[in-house]
Length: 331
Ligand code: CP
Image (cartoon, rainbow, N blue to C red; front, side, top):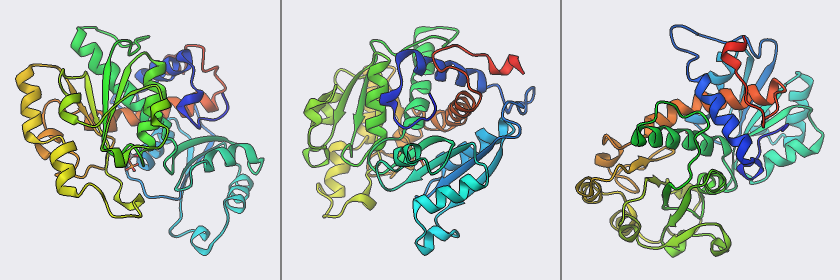
């Protein structure tokens, strides 16, 4: 595979290769192995034309831990703010010999346009495009779910482990969420069952044709407790009409409140609480839930570096995504 644009493009074997390689990458950056020389002499451009904290910083960290040269490029402070087109920006990056372009853009489909345009001969990694996809977020979520599964089942290793039989409830603003879409395709490829939980006004048209169950009540979705609840950020910046339901109604009906957390605790289920960040505390998730021992929010951030190292390594080293690899010990 030359680019990573969508989790729909990942086969079962390719997804496990990315996750197994990410597990190995987790050892890099610790005291014993600070960096790998794998991408020495290669240039990774972070082209972030929409705001980001976690994704931008973790791609930069990932590329540096693989010894790549990194160019960070954002709309603010570049000629994009003067109206320069994606084509002219891409051709400028091509002239600087970029080997990979990690792109975040508010327009759905822009990474695919960049990959297929011929404007630049580089691997393209989608770091979030509009409401379409965020494939590395789904991969880091799958890595976190594998770790949760291994802990719950008393396994020593996650190598080769899929998500067969797990039930994941994805809760909230599905309408605007690229995270929900990328997770749906990847989780189902890896064998998990997905339930979308949302008010009818925050579900996309056509969701009935997607490979998931849809329910409107969070209390219904939590009984029996799923293996994980993935709380989605309410994306008020993408809402052009008034937010309906109101924030108060939303927090009460679809928020992971202290009362719902207490019900999970009383049930004794090992349900993981996930959130891609940034969180609206007090809206989709209470601080009690976000900071509880069930929360995997910071594990997700940590796993983001390993997954992005894996993706950059596999795309730029020329390894076949369907073939297991051992980058740490190969160096
Ligand atoms: N989860 C996520 O994409 O966060 P950022 O917008 O901070 O990158």
